[in-house]
Length: 457
Ligand code: PMP
Image (cartoon, rainbow, N blue to C red; front, side, top):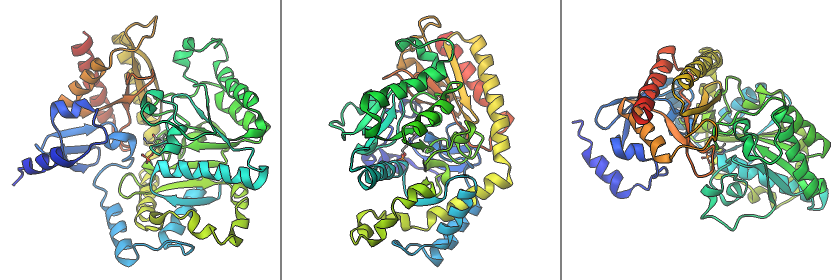
């Protein structure tokens, strides 16, 4: 009765997998994930896997099989599944209130369905504000080398990963790149100092602003910890300086919390680690842990106020409506997701287990010279693999994939889609559900230890 070979056949014949390049899945063959409970998933052969990437791309923050979320979604859908426009819904209003309580200084929530859509909406708001306030002039959006913001042409225009973007041009105009802040690779940046690197990296943003003309720059969009771009934790002194620069030139600070949002780094939001106050925040993955599609753009009341006159614009109603932003499954799931994090003290657990994971990774780095750097915040950690600690040259991707495949053979799914070096996915990523136990963390790093020994000796 458990023979899922027909499902596997259908999958092979018809599914266009997103991570078609994710070779480890090919080689060890867990083609279909059938079931999940807590931090574990089971494939079509009944094999158990410890999921250290929360559903592949850092999403399932509260773990699998949460009946209370499924029940809340069911109850909401049979009562009132959908209505869009100016009418609201009970879970929509209640989740917005709970969310805003976690985000002092912000006050308005716009619902959508994906991180890309939320970022696209934020970019459009910057353009609208430029037209409303500055005669269209202050329209440029700054984004950072190595950061990623989504799949649309707009988001890719703000994408700092050239090799990923290679086939998508031409891009939208008005997006301008600023340098990265990856301290481990500062030797690749002209003039980067050893002392006060964080301030220097932030000052590079100011240089771009001055070059472009501050009167043309509307917003700066950054990830709090760069995820796909290599698990880049910001250097000391960076964020404070970034905030000062934005204030100085009247530039909106847009933080992309699609990965870090809702607990991943050990605070509700990644930006809260650094004491900054954004004007716009986007979030998606962890908002409902993958139990329903939901994304939010959250803004200050000041940003909202700039759109007040839209009420008298007859075009406004249909101009920017998100059809499925009116689906109630998302906020119904998000409410339970948030309650679980609170009731189970998952932020505390994230901090404790994140610290254990970093300790374990540091011990692995002592043992394996191939680990050049370990970085992380909460349960979002990475280990960058290099051929040589002096030159810091990235290891060949085929070897990284061997490590991932070896772990998968051991029943441990880790990630290696993080590119600290353009074109090389050379940073192993560890981002388990926030419910991870000490045993889970140790199993994860033990598997990596064995894999590194087998692949690199
Ligand atoms: N921003 C960041 C930082 C992301 O990592 C991603 C997805 N990996 C997105 C935005 C896009 O989100 P989505 O896939 O929900 O469109």
